[in-house]
Image 1 (cartoon, rainbow, N blue to C red):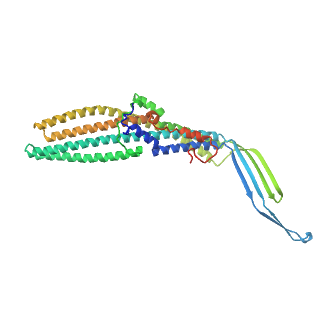
Image 2 (image 1 turned 60 degrees about the vertical axis):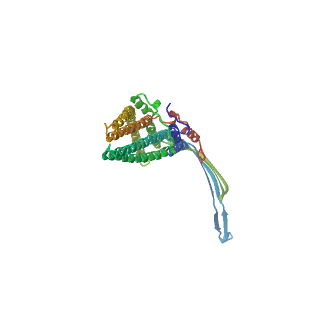
Image 3 (image 1 turned 180 degrees about the vertical axis):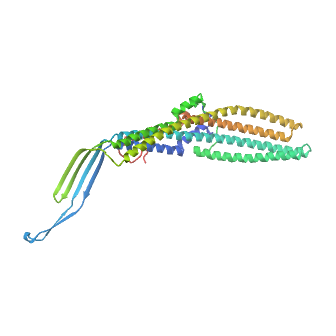
Length: 445
């Protein structure tokens, strides 16, 4: 079981992750960008669809004739209201492969953007998990410091009592008082850090933290070895996959630009009617034909664009190699952090037990005069440090497991099995792909 779920009133890690997934602005923005990328397919397909244009015109004309006297003399005035309506249709037949390349490029861009969306999902969920664990850690550290202040306050009182009956010294009182004041300042710093972590939690999750329950590391999603983790990341990490799809985008862009050097074939048809021309009352026209355009030389710009696109393609391939190296480094670092946290937890637990036993023994020895107040204070400090280190190690253990799963590429709703409605980017893509007309988006905007 991945989560340590508490009572119904408590806020578990799975609930915090579900809240972040459902409403985080960064994730919603990435979803909107993915929907925008979907429209690129419709734009590319539109280049191969017919174009129909209508036209209409109307005017007023005057013609005046002056006749010589032998024809009766005088002037003759003629007024006309010429008008026309028409329709034109253009249907591309062959565009040098640009239409097919444009569609393939748009589809690759959609795949790349979906990986960007997956990366954003992982970033949001990792931030939510980190914020959750930071609040738990800082709450525990505040509790430790509060107990430390209470313990040291008792030591100050005891030192003063012993000094009052002549069994202690002023130095003992001063040492106890100094340790107490330091503990008060550390408590205030711990409370300030807790407030900062609570604010970060709200930013990551969208809601103030309630009574948070504990959380376990997500070991069930972890590969069995570092080598297996690196291998899995190479095929599952969204940064790498997005880079691979961007290579496809750049490849299709080269093909698209090369199409500008090839012949263009199109079907054209038109029909029109004109009215009230001085030479006729009505005139109908209709035509249909096939046009072929063969580019010979356009100034060299097309060739420069192709060369530029090939360089961009080379850069995209290099970016994939860089992403692979970066992801591998992240996996190795996360694996090392997780292993170190596991080992540290065992060591710190042993240290806490030993420090607690030592403190109890020092206090008993102080009562019979074999230990000083300073010995008690030093041992209390050692115990608080050991407990603080244990709290930090337990936090690092959980966060490290999330970082490793994210580096591999599996930190998503489906792998975590969160109880939240899954956002499917494919639904929007299917809704708009064959949409020939209309201004409204599928959600009604």
